Image 1: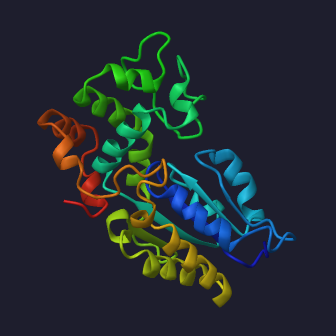
Image 2 (image 1 turned 30 degrees about the vertical axis):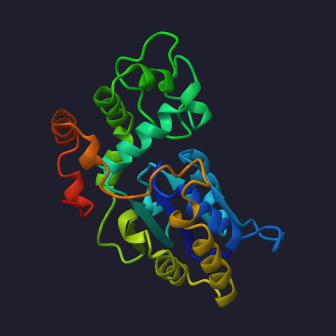
Length: 253
């Protein structure tokens, strides 16, 4: 990347349109079309690898972290967030069916979960994987375990500045049904060419949640507000105790 060009960075969270965003950007920055460039890469939650490599990429994305912004200037950053209570519901169902390999590792350690920057919940039994644990627990206990798994994710959400003009924030609920206009705003923020915008816009529309529901293992139910039906009073109270002020900071009531 040109030393004068800003780092194009996207930051999101596990179960917050990560796969969707990556699919769009891999098309826009396709190395098959431009093999002489290093294109786009998603680093999951591997922060050290991301920080070492990002300056050589045309665009990059990472999940579940607050970044050292001073080390990344100049930058143009976009962020996706989702109601953290809905992320717990989505993650609970997704992890319970062992949708990703790390969910099936018995006796997991924090290093086993580096890919998702997850916290090992209390009460996991000897020989159990995270998926096994969620299958053993009832739904209330399972939601509480998922809430603990999210600890580092949610604390990082609280650390991001909200007044930086070079960082655009998009809420999951505002993206659904408005994918074309959201990605137009992202592409303008990144100052992409008309051709790149055209490619990206078409990919964003073709792979939107409404079109992919039932066709992708990553999408169970894209609707918002699911926590209202699945949180018990205990779950809601525990969430507020663990993460006070989080929903308000992200613009949710």
